[in-house]
Length: 134
Image (tube, one colour):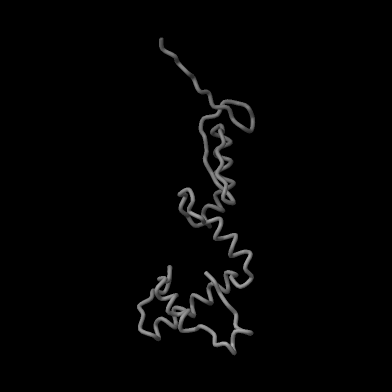
């Protein structure tokens, strides 16, 4: 015995016939919505300025992006300005100490560890030193 199943997409906004399912994500949550071609165009048009200004990221499950962002936000010493300043300091120190480091991109864990070891505050400085994590 054979069965034939028919799937009919219904526009989640209007209840009319939908032509496509759109996948999107925001704030770490992935969504999908069935839309008619008109509503799909409207959604894409509304998001276009944000998409053009955004960076593409990994969509691998468990990539931990959300957790990293949340932990940085809760640590007052890791604002984007503080992170940028620390990166600049690490790069300058690395060049002065014979390490090859690029102008942009991720700084190797080896260089960061060497910088941290070389710049560890003395016991007298610990009371007033600003500590960065990252």
